[in-house]
Length: 173
Image 1 (cartoon, helix red, strand yellow):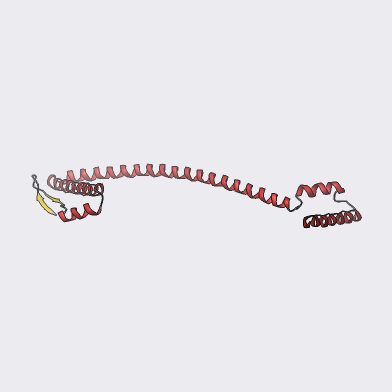
Image 2: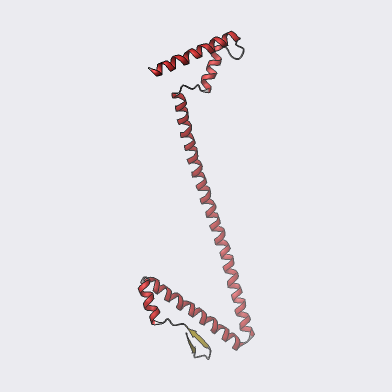
């Protein structure tokens, strides 16, 4: 670091990078990263020097300039906060929209998966000759509904058992 006295009589601070640090940085990092780092340091140094200069001028001219600088700084800060709130609100809205879009896509995927699973289960049950609700309803209508006599129900049940035996025997062959 070097300390300089400027033309106006105020003290400025300038940061210098040692040549050895520059050579190490060039060897270990890509050129654009080194250049970016140098520009950032230079910019930070200039901002620091501008702040020192403004402070020095404010001390020379008295509290009026200092108060004006404080007022201006407060205005800039408040404007940045307002703009930040607007950006935050916009980003939140975009995030909410994207989340709703992703939920809809996930929901449709689950619906399709559920439908495919149901179709497979129905196919397996059909291959196993398991009666569906519509098959049971048709049988109930065919045998006369819930008021069927016990004898008719027994004969229907024994016929069902006989059908099951015949199916099993057919599968063994």
